[in-house]
Image 1 (cartoon, rainbow, N blue to C red):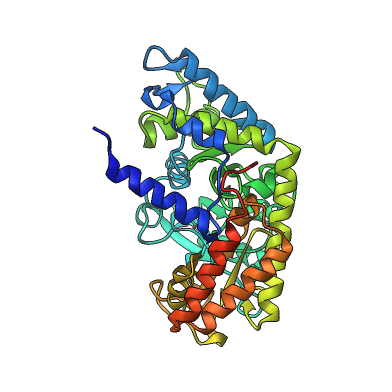
Image 2 (cartoon, rainbow, N blue to C red):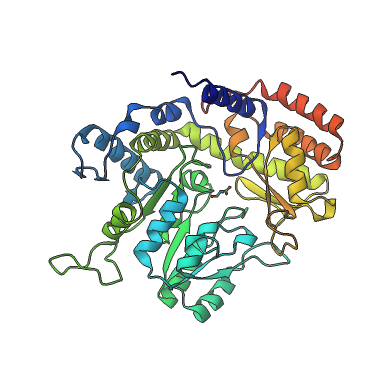
Length: 424
Ligand code: DSN
């Protein structure tokens, strides 16, 4: 049976992506070979376990793909150990917490409503239900994290795990200070670099592997691979929880983390996705990808500058990475209204809480923009000025369907010149 219903959906989604301006900060467009690896025969293979230590026969070939993914990833970030099996960033974080914590232990993370992530202790997530979350946030006046204040919270709350990393923070992190705090209170330090991973791999931002005990990430945001997760360490070390092997020696942390992924939190790995991750990591090691990441940052700065010139408030004033969070309160429009109006013009972004927001997460006062996806399509700084003008026109005419429709026609006509696959 030919599935014409799904074929039709695939075609329409392709058209939507092709015609529109994609500003969701966590999205990107993969290369053809990254996509082809995902749609390959490797999807048929069960390979529970790790390369050369599987619970199923016939894994010799897929083992090579996983080893390539591990080796390329280690080279990309300077890691000594990597697990490429987590199905997502949330799964990667779940595995780290299973490895490092007991139920009820305290975790200290960046507040979700200030730009953090659900899996860093939100009460609606496993991380907030199984563990005791406490949070740090940004300063009201600056929109920036004051890293010295995290020490005070850590000394008071005695977390077992300190988590750094965010979904909507436009700045680099002071990993050295956080590591000193972690050492002082006897905590492990984990960085979740899902958003800026590509910018870290290409050295535009600091590398947390030099300071953090454990680093997790997704592979599909700035890193431009398939949807998935990874865990890495810059140094391996004997686990601090007293877990021993049959010889009575402390197991290395890498072993504890490997078994927290499988069998701890996952079953069979997605070998087609792991092969695709290997392709993406290989691409990320090229000079072209380095140039791409530099352009992502230039584009984010150009977009934020144009929006500021039009009177928009960027939380923290400027961006150092691929994203920005706009506080829309001075423009008298909510995040929800802004997202809905922009989608009508095929400009896709997401509403987002701003720090100290007075509206609910379903309404919000902010909107988040990122430039990873549009940069992959080949857009440059001058195109960001055009996008800023479209955004302003739509937001200032949110109830005027005629004007929004005009913008949509312009967006469609303009985006035709930019290919959808990375590297084309
Ligand atoms: N939901 C992702 C984001 O948009 O940032 C993070 O998991």
